[in-house]
Length: 278
Image 1 (cartoon, one colour):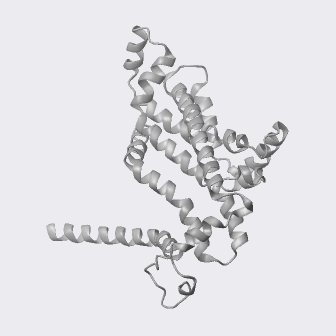
Image 2 (cartoon, one colour):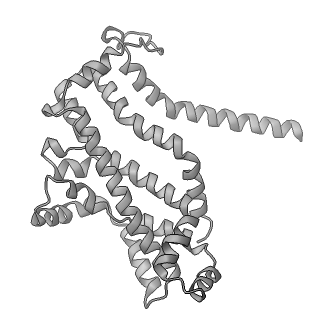
């Protein structure tokens, strides 16, 4: 029995390791390409070890797409991603708390309607949202990149699940002590569900950092462009300079990778807590 169990564990770890290698290899190959000399890019058999040619990163950094520096694009992306995360975190957690702890008419029906919005493909909302921003005069601005994502249906669902795990006796005891609903929300409820908020914040930040289609549509001014749209312009400008393209892609990927590695424990804990209670 023990022998069969060990064989089963070995097979499981083998499969998991194989799948992990397959998933990680494209990322590794991007880094190898970004550090390779041009003459070694298409040799056969391919070199799996980089040449450590860091000049590619220098050339990439000096090749400013559309005359705007990479620093500006990175700061644009950082500002938009951070603002979107904070706004969505506040709005979504506030709505999630209301649906979990407050009693008002048609509460469950309204929540079901909001959940139904998740079934609508995002592409269907592009034209209405674009026309709304056009009439508001917000095209080519930071508002166009932040405001439409200031609340999230997924965030409302996730935070509602987390707030529902708080015992009602806690809220009732706070009311007896004269605690207002706002104070209970900020000082008691939010700190308890902090892991879920971390997980949701990471989701929103990654989504905003990697956003491409919406920024491409609503922003034609290079001064407001985020990094992903700048990469698209860079691809058009550099053509087949694969080592420079790989260097730019690596530069855009590393910040979010580091962010995930730092907060991976809170991320996993938050997702687990949100999924415990239905």
